[in-house]
Image (cartoon, rainbow, N blue to C red; front, side, top):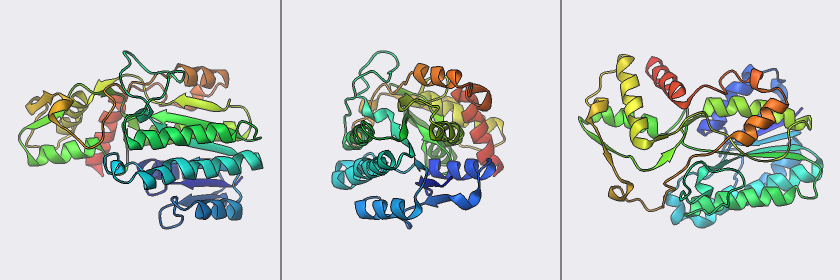
Amino acid sequence: MNILVFGKDGQLGKAFAEQLKAGQFNQDTIRFVGRADCDLANTQHVSDLLQSFQPQVIINAAAYTAVDKAESESELAFAINAKAPETMASYAASQDVTLLHFSTDYVFDGTKQGSYTELDQANPLGVYGKSKEAGERAIVQAFVKGAGQYAILRTSWVYGNGANFIRTILRLAKERAELRVIDDQFGIPTSAQWLAELGSQLASSLANKQFASGIYHAVPVGEINWYGLAQLAVQSAIEAGATLKASSGAISPIPASQYPLPAPRPMNSRLATNKLQSELERLDLVSKLPHWNTPWDKQVTAYVRQLLAD
């Protein structure tokens, strides 16, 4: 089974590389594609790669994720986040193959009280969210009359092997005695490793036409704001032996209005996972995902400890 993974240079792509190489897959049939291998902003490049490799499973872990920069690079953001997935989906639907695509909490405006479900209306605030939502719509439309299978996994606050909020906070805590972090934006930190573990299982089930095509929310158990996440990251690092200038108590909460950025962010990024949970239980896949029910805070603590150990 040929597996084509887009986004090998990103946090999620790197996690998939580890997961798939450790799994029961023929390594000769897996190809990981990065920026140097395929220009996702060029539709012809994407199409040519698909035609030449002829994958049975396409995993799109790539995206234009520079949220603020997207406000001035909308054409590039839409090319990578909407047009490239549309090309992948059109190929998959026409060739009866599987597409696993990752999307974001930014497709919502964040005004809902409580967790968003897959039935809630998307209403992105900025260019990044709009481009990702356009990609979702293009994928769904491509498979309306197609023969393949697809899953779109919306997730939030991803961290892994690469630049992310947790790494930034730990760096700043080494440099400064006091930190100020937003406390009125809520979401769920999600490990790239956790996502890749889940995605690998789903890709296999999709390819076997067991998993139902559709949009799903994929985040761990729990919720937090950026301030709480920063406190946990710093406290976990100190407990693991790190020497920092700032303690968790030296972090002050501030409203988002005191930290203006070019692109608007959803104030509420909480995602309900009931739909995905039900599908996993139906296929008896929960037992194959040992970290599925591990709360976000335990995963973050383990991640921080691993960072210090490396």
